[in-house]
Length: 523
Ligand SMILES: Cc1cc2nc3c(=O)[nH]c(=O)nc-3n(C[C@H](O)[C@H](O)[C@H](O)COP(=O)(O)OP(=O)(O)OC[C@H]3O[C@@H](n4cnc5c(N)ncnc54)[C@H](O)[C@@H]3O)c2cc1C
Image (cartoon, rainbow, N blue to C red; front, side):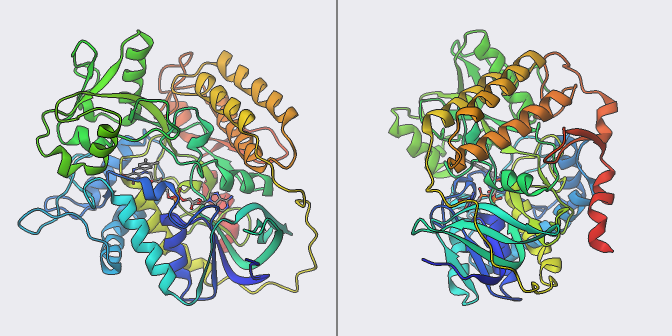
């Protein structure tokens, strides 16, 4: 399908951030959602555990705020976290009004789940462990009903179009294999994360970091890329992606054990199996390094098959019965805390370019995301960015554009796998300067042999290099970033961000720069 040449708003991506934004901004103009696969192929769809919001009796936004800051290891932006937790309950009500059915107890009240580093059971879930599928379907149906929204599936956004530091649209490879320019008053990147640059990941194939890579190439500032969250418990086998065994299983009493049946989280952290994800993932990694297989023993959860129907099915399909057998697990790349620097209205340092969801770094996750806060981030900020997006002025007459992207796209699966292997081996859960330098030189080697029109590979390489160079610069360990050669958290680094912008070396900037960088928007 040929896409419109001009539209009011372009939304890149159809996860919770993209569809949420589309539904909201369609009230103010014609909205085009461009997504590189089908509407439902996204990290959002595969989310299991649920969405966190301070709704349960005895809970409060203040308690949710505290838990988020603690998990974020002193690197969260407090104003952004306030926006997240204060707006959470209202946005969850919006989801319910759109038709989302969260699970309830027999008495009809919400069946709140408990997850790691939450001080109270506050996780709303749907269809047991298929919360993402429920939310994605509800939002997709809503978007399809709205006449002002055009949905373009199987269309790949290759690059942004920038004129005088204003984003005026993007280059799209449409579903007929033709490149075309689409221009717009405002463009929103909601293209998700980049787990697919790692050999072991829970993220589906679409998560190759395209949004962050294209923004970087366009001149956007990118920060905190060293902070990658590795989920402790993915089902261990040879699949890509690996199937996630939700943290909610540990919340309901699942215990981590070695092949000898010994629990190893006791004494590692006061919250034991429910410690922050980085702590649990590293403890598992150490067991594996010592040659031990690690399992999640959920046999004490008597209602496992009804509480976790998706996980139950995935396990039984590979011959494991979670009611009687411990589940073999391994850590896997899961979420990127860093991304495109944005304020709490999703504004970036490029005029008319907005970002929402996992591609963004608004500051709500700090160095480590609190479980179930990312679906919340998507829905809270997709409502908020529209407050500014709606006021974008129309484009001046745009000169005819010529594309530098005319060659047919090629895929480069072998080189893509080499990126994945490199990142897992040298820039994964445990990092050292020596390994990170090795990763950099391997990525440079791959770049030399990468065909110019292998767009996905180039996105993967760009994002991988941002992670590795961020990890090299940050000489401490904090949250999702662990340096064996700098194993301690260092208070000096608390105030700093590693900032990347194209054409210059990464630099260390004060976190307070966030305000000044973005303040031009308020002039
Ligand atoms: C297995 C799994 C379980 C999870 N469980 C939870 C949970 O229980 N709770 C929670 O809060 N979080 C969870 N997360 C994290 C959460 O799902 C994501 O962080 C969140 O859904 C991200 O939403 P998003 O809209 O930013 O991105 P996504 O949902 O990933 O959507 C990105 C969209 O962008 C599209 N796209 C990408 N590149 C391009 C391009 N070049 N051109 C066009 N389109 C493009 C993709 O196709 C996709 O539609 C989980 C993640 C995974 C993988």
